Length: 205
Image 1 (cartoon, rainbow, N blue to C red):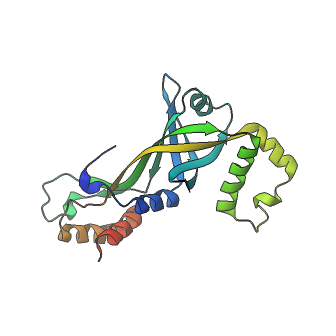
Image 2 (image 1 turned 180 degrees about the vertical axis):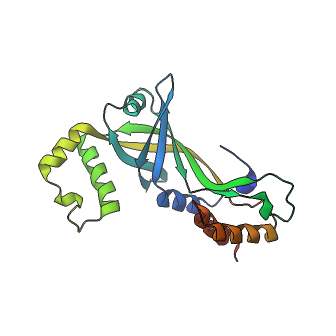
């Protein structure tokens, strides 16, 4: 991970808030030969002073087999990014860059039984779909759910360490940061609006 002290967020509540808001994460492990990974929606759980991620994945995939062999995983949460044009700076003879936020969490993955898988699917569905629509989990026929359970397995990751980078032009002066925000709002492509908003939250008193 790109690591400089002025890009590190030391407020753990802000870090937790970020990963909860960006909980569609990349879960990566190794099968002993190559890295393997999968993009998965996660639930973030704080329990007894520890942090856990829960979710579910398709059985008999490369990442399922790899995670069974090696419980050590890296979970990556990331924001949209924005390219920062050095022409926006007061002094322009410097490198352009990219602003973004990312959190890397190392942990140990354990797979659940059928009851745990059922709860993992229900929790993720309730979180994103709600409980009062035709597609809510409680309205899915049992036969369909039973068939899903044959192909899906739940998991729980216990986090052992976490690093972050909140790269939002902290190394630029106030005038440059104001110009960056203005240009991002004017350009407004990709992650420009998101990064401009995060910079405003950080630098506006």
